[in-house]
Length: 335
Image (cartoon, rainbow, N blue to C red; front, side, top):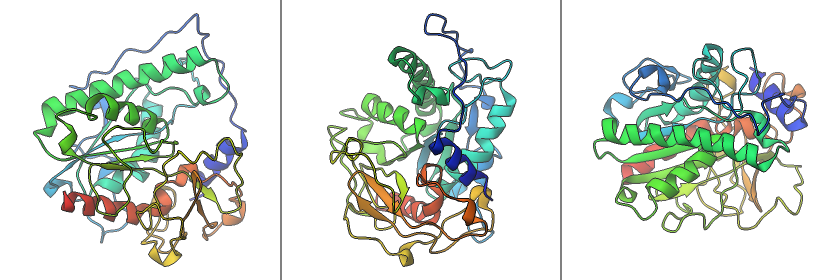
């Protein structure tokens, strides 16, 4: 149960070591994926995978009858450099890493959307976590560009072979959000595909309010053709003035508006702990927008005395699991 919170604590406290990876002058990358092969997808609606799961028998997987698709881009899971995977970008032949992706982000995040659409989640050569430390700009960009080429290739394969003109939800977290921002710019802004966009859930990274020329911030719960974004912190977190940028979009995942009024805990339809431990937790946290961030109370659960981080990044989806799920269904219905 505490694994998700322990990971958050470690990352935000800076206790994760920066791997000794190849220099910018020596930038090997693992082989690219072939998205015609099932093994290069973490989730497909035609396979038995973690995106099919739900935290309760009373909450069904609705992909079989869903009228929309969900293209989900997972966050950074690649943090180390085990023998055979000593790259800035992850090798898709790393079975241990693939399993970690499936058992964390696909189970806890991608599954949120299996009532709203058929879930497609590509494996990709994700950049190592170290690119988000104080690395050289060239190294960071080369690693992220490599990862994005895979995400773009996966999306184009999905469009060609799976979509068949269906409405599309884009959803992502953290590093996945960075790639999905680029994907929206490259494939949706000002294109013929734009009318198929139900909404984009761009969670865990700052997104500017004016990021897209024709995709606005969602300000109503059933608005379509728009995007939502938030980054979650404990109520006593005090950001630097530089980070608290008023140009950053924040949508409250309990009210689904940009109002700065606190959305009370009674609106929280249910969050989940890591791997659904204990099932749905109704009224887990309240939520309030302050500046560029979303703030919540410290959630109550057995063992929370050890949960001391002010940064709730890893729980951006988990704290609002049922609210995100029902919102995605509502936007599809409105579409």
